[in-house]
Length: 73
Image (cartoon, rainbow, N blue to C red; front, side, top):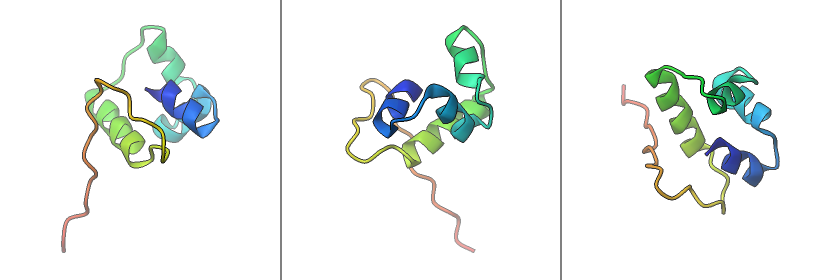
């Protein structure tokens, strides 16, 4: 998923990891069998959905989170 995003944007996995998770090595850690909290995963998926490159296809079989709207005051 992140690698597809990186390729579509022309950036590396570490840069995506920094943008999404504020830690450049986290996606490499996950790819090597590491873990992350559910809330972090949900925030990352929402960030990717909201920032997905126009014209790039969202990966098949990966549910896309709905955009968040700010609550009315």
